[in-house]
Length: 213
Image (tube, rainbow, N blue to C red; front, top):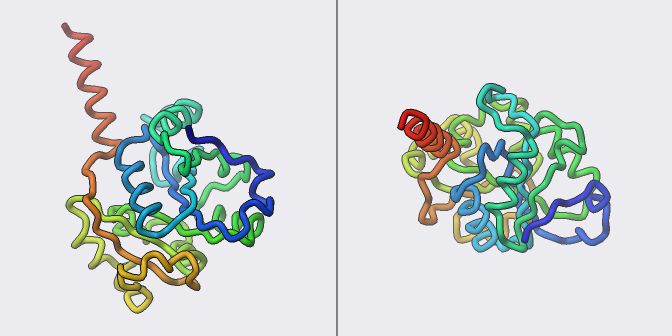
């Protein structure tokens, strides 16, 4: 069963040398796609852990339709179900709103850990919309995991183009955590098409059907 890292753990020597993947998101709700990215990252990047950073409120997403934070944490805990996946409320503890700020805080509080930022290919496409997105790329190695319908768009995206000379061959993915940023890798590995939006639509359709029966 996954657990929640505490703020005290961030400064602990127990993190020294650990390779940790960070997967941020609303997890509204958590789904197989999140778990797929995490399992691929654990295996292909040689990570010791993956932390799911459940966002109090994604700045790029409307509050309408966003489940309460406690419900999203519960959803993530129920989906993770792996000892190496840690469901975390660290952004709430740190009081950070943007990924760039979260990364900076983690680097200060856990300087001996080797963090890698994880994202699906769809997020690489939209990355320039993120607050101080170049700071993210230039502060921490990044692993992009393929998602159906986004591989070509991601490879041709402004972010990929700008940092094309910092992309490493997928054969070197296991070395990414030890590399100096900016460094990133694109991994194709039996991607899943499931998304939180799709799940919410299915839940809504099921509720509507039941309410009109």
